[in-house]
Image (tube, rainbow, N blue to C red):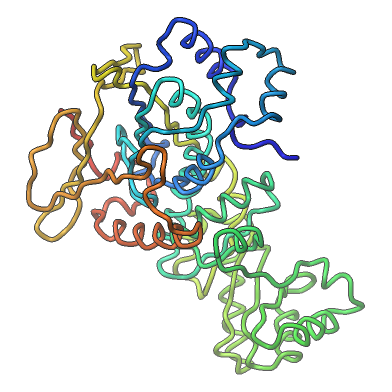
Length: 427
């Protein structure tokens, strides 16, 4: 039987808990905050993603017999610790930025208020989900911006861990990707799925025409034919001969994509296939997509550069204790200082609705016209505030993200290195 999410953690959380139980501090009321000290190098904003997945995991965060046995096998045998874990369930409060929201350095994207014992156990679970999903979403948002309204398909499942692939597909769709190749993401979260064939299918057949004919017979003329297995331009001619001028699309997966897209469009038009789309794939990132902006490309398939660290660098979120029994506490280490106290956060906008600054403070923030509160309740006394299904929660997050992106200032869309699009003001 698979172990539950309670073991998706680091050992030091349990050793801290054991010591806190022994000295009587495990029941102290605490506030932990999740924030990033900086954005990944060159990024103008980040996107909060993974909140829904964290809430799903929190609902099943229990130490049952199997989990407790696993702890004992690893040498965690303190009877007081094991007894406490056997009875624990989360009864605290969680609030944070709505999933899909933008964040900046110092933004308190998630706040957990609970006893130290309950809250400290969540650190690794929170950070492993938010750091991964926010990295993917932040990268995907840049690609959506570079695509300029042309659809992007997420297709990175074969380049990452099988469960990370599902999370990546979810995060990419949240930011505006049109679909994913991953069927589990479709089943769990309602993400639209897409896919046709690989080069292996063409190589399976005696000739290209036979492969195309089999695909069209199975999927209809609206399908996308991969035309670059042998000779790309001849592949396009063969595709139109087989499918007719109503063919849905051709896919280019190698070579100089910009030049090939121009040639493909000219050839398709000369053959009368004016409505046949040109889709490109092959290790695309936001810079490659931007470079194709003037090419006659109708859509992009993105994989490796979205789901790996090269394209989605870590966002470096941390989980820090900021309040204990109502008293602010802060870390003062060089280069890793924190600000004590539970924070409030608002985003300021000008008269035209453009975001101008983020204000974060452990003190009440004086309201101004155009302010938007950023913190929303997620869990109250251990009970989720929303009863939306995982698929509905993701649709809500996608809609929220689309709205808040519209308020970004123009400089936020630049792909060049630069400062965050909004200043974070603290008081």
